[in-house]
Length: 460
Image (cartoon, rainbow, N blue to C red; front, side):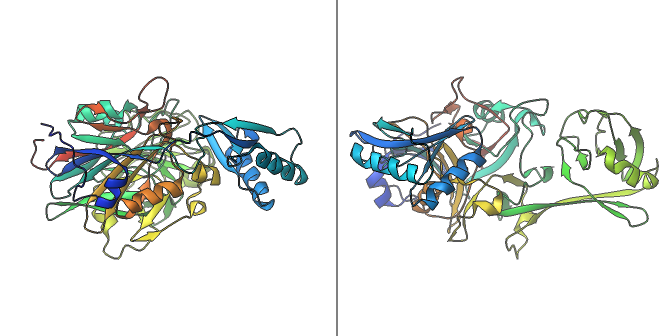
């Protein structure tokens, strides 16, 4: 049962913050509160800005931002879908914008740059923002990560996944492959019930959940991947990835959670392993069946001849894959985590603010542009915070840059926090209803995975 009622100064969110920006709050279940925050306001005045250019690639957009910086001019990146553009901040007076345009020409930009007249500028500093926050008592709420279709590939809306699993609430999860045969394949760390389904991606931020004395605990950091095959003679060979497309120079491990078969094309070889022994070798074939309780080692054509002498039916092999923390974890909490979800960038870590997109191979454009955002964080007392920020709705909610999202998570009292997949993926579900405003024109996006919340008592 959902308990409704306005709470304008709840204990779990600082009163000063709610008085300033809260639209209301409600108790979803014991230990779970939903807060709607309306922050900032759209400018009612006309502004003027220089439209610098539109680009197909983030790298081109980032190069333009660098050029502007060298000229002493601030550039504001914006994007929607796969299109990017750069503008200057709005000025109140057209003459100011024209003066900025002349400076740009002096720096080598075209003299045909457009001066735009804008109202409710989505790049304006004051917002507005519509924000949904779930505040979770870790002694009363279980947190789990689930993948769509209960496999390592496949797509469902966050609503469909939450309803099917019977969750009280949910938010969308990490980055994933959106199209093709392997749609839904995680593009970062994914561990469910202790099984690693996808390796960490480029040392990006992640969150892990584990239980300690009946309390849900969270750990934040950056992860790398370490995988190896150990043969009978002690020879070790690196595994490059898990449950994803294999390149000609790679070795990829496929587990039963992936699919009935490896879905690979012909070329290279695939080695079937069960009970630590090679049971079959398929050379020049693809889409090998994955045995229940076993795995398939898919070897790219460039690697097969190197490994061929060690491959024989009946040979004993050991497979070892693990997520390796890149930030200190002296208590081994990542090893205790049953559920791990990759995202990025890591915004807060143990009370320290981080603005290091380059360490996670995140572009400047992604970091600075405003998008719908999803994030998870934790307070010093263990309270868990789950956030969605609507975007791409001028006059209602313009989305946030990563620095703005970091500010928000700090305002909410978080000491550690990580950004998750955003844009059209951003979704929050409460008791079978989507409470935010996803931006895809076709409705709620079909996502790869989600974070699900359940009552520890078994009933809402």
